[in-house]
Length: 364
Image (tube, rainbow, N blue to C red):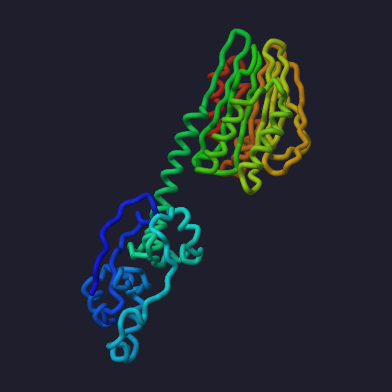
C-alpha cells in the first residue's frame, strides 16, 4: 500500500519536493487506484523495489484514464503497479535547481505540466517535484534577483551628482523610468581640475540591465583616464564583448573636461547629443556621423571632438534614452524643449535647471 518518505532539507532540487508518496512494486494496481481515490490530492506516486530503489512513476490521471476504458478494471485487476510504471527522467537530490531547470525540456516548461522523481546518490527514492513547483521557485528567485540587482545598482549609481565651485558647476542626473534599466550618469575626478563625465545606456532591463550597469560603473571608477578616452572606449568595448555571449549594444556619451583651461573632449558611441548654450544660442556639438554601440563588434572607429569653453557657457549632454521618449502625440522629447527651458530661465542655477528640465519632461 501507499507509504511516504520523510522530509529532507537542503539547498538543492530536494527543496522543491512536495510529494513523497510511493508504492512497492508488488502492490495491486486496483489497490493503488482505490488508495488514490481516498487521497485525491496525490497527483503522482513512485514505484519502488523492496530496498526503496526507484523503478518508475505513475501519474494519477493516466492511471484513472487507463482504468476508465471499457473493461479496464477487469483487464488489469490482477496486475501489479510495476506493469504501468513510466520511465521518467530522474534527478539526483543533490543537483542544483538551476541545473535541473536547464535539463527539463522546453515543452514541459511551456505546458507547465509534468512530474519528475528524485533519488539519492544510492538510487533510493526521495520524492517527486512537478514542473509547477519548479516554475514557482524560479519565479520567486527571479524576483529576488531583480530586487538584489536593483539595490546594488542604486547603491553604486546615484541618480543625482552635483559639484559646485566658484569657477564651474557639474551636474549629472538620471531620470528613472517606469521600467528600471541600466541607464546611468557619472562624474569622476581623476586629476587636479580634471574630470570625466558621461552617460551610459544599456539595452537590457531588470537583472541583466542592472548587472551591466554595475560592471560599467566598476570600469569607470578604476580606469586611468589620463590614458585618454579612445583607449578607455576600446578597453570597455572588449570587456563587454568578453562578458556577454551575444552583442548587447551599450550606448555611451563620454566627455573629458579640463577645468583649468576650459578644454573639453567629447566621444559618442550611441546616438547621444551634446549642446552648448552660449549667449542665448543653443549650439549642437559635433559628434561622429556614424556611431557604433559598444559591445557589438571587436573593432570600433572611435572619433573624438575637442571644444574650448568660454565663461558663461553651459554644456548639456543628452543620451538617446531621453531623446527617444515620445508623448501621446508621437512627438519626441528633443532639443527644442531644452532650448525653451533655457530661454525661459536664463539666470537659473544648474541645480534648479535639473528640476526645471525634469518637470518639463513629465509635463511633456
